[in-house]
Amino acid sequence: MDDPQFQQHGGPHAAEHRPHRRPIHHTLFFWIAASFLLAAMATYVLTSNLSSAPGTKPVPAALP
Image (tube, rainbow, N blue to C red; front, side, top):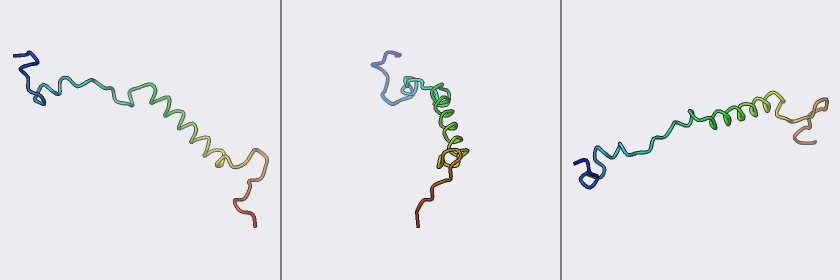
């Protein structure tokens, strides 16, 4: 009775044949990408929006 031709589709045996997937936060790629995103956000915030070069005045958004 364990032969696949005798099993119903969608019955209790359907859940056993799903492929095993690791959660995304368990992969190395996720943590590398997350660290790059956090570094980019920290750079953006700590450099005052990357609006000016060191030693120069920020340019106003609209000139009078």
